[in-house]
Amino acid sequence: MFSRLVGNQRAQEALRRMLANGRVPGALLFAGADGVGKKLFALELAKALNCRSPVGVEACGHCPVCERIGKFAYPAADVRDAYEKVIWSDFGDVGLLLPRNRLIVVHAVRDLERESNFRPFEGRARVFIVEEADRLNEAASNALLKTLEEPHPASHLILVTSRPASLLPTIRSRCQTVRFAPVAAAEIEQYLVREHRRSGEEARLAALLSRGRIAHALELNLDKYRSERDSMLETLEALVAPADRMRLLRAAEDLSDAKRKDDFEPRLEMLETLIHDVWLLAQKAPAAALVNEDVRERLARLGERVESRRPARWLARIAELRAQLAVNINRRVAADALLLSMAE
Figure 1 (cartoon, rainbow, N blue to C red):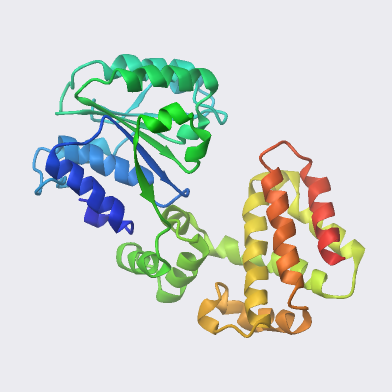
Figure 2: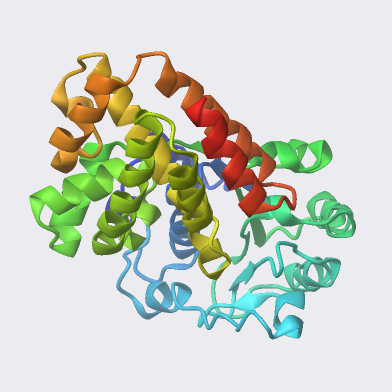
């Protein structure tokens, strides 16, 4: 049932109306930030369309069909052929397309086109979910248009993306868009306490750090976060202190360590959050506005020493670097330039 999902009440109501009216479109576009639950809503809709024991217009969530729809055998990243076709759930009428090496290839879309023309094998509807639909390459996008132009009445296509503007306008125009917003921190906190038995303090920190992304809150390793945060706090202290180029260069080397390349962007985001907290403290903002409340005293000391305009400049520099990460830049050089420019 949609009520088991966290947040996005408007999206829930929109999907309920579609089901109640018996008018679920053949093509839907679920658009919103990463991690806010778009895929979970897509799977819940697939369950509602096929559930054997529905509760009103929604899925029961407990029958064999509902349980099987949520189970996928995801292929290993190095098995290329597996990503060139639909990846099926344990229920034979619900499948996924996934990107490999950042792209969804044309072979996968052609397999989806073929499969979408078959009548349902077990249920009432076939549902195909395209994850990260903005990863469709040009050939795949053009192939998808054919599927959208000639839909089978019992097939439903759900495109899931955080970057809808990256899709072809002709694809967007053929889909009904359902928009998803970040989930309120209080809702995420309550969910973590209720469903995952997190302590109140840990649940609050995870909820605030998630920035409305429920998936991020669930995946967050707080022990690792606190360890990484200490490193970023030391970097921030080096920026506030009188210029020490060697200390900053060592911090940049640690930030861009090739052995931890997957941590580069999360650590930049962590640095952004710390700077924002320092900025708030420098502006005498209320404590409730802070994300890293558990290190308030350390942040407050930094806030007393920093000129109020500097955090804004720092955040702008980090935003510029993050925008450049879409292309293949030298992260070591970029980290050096970032921290040295921030120290000016």
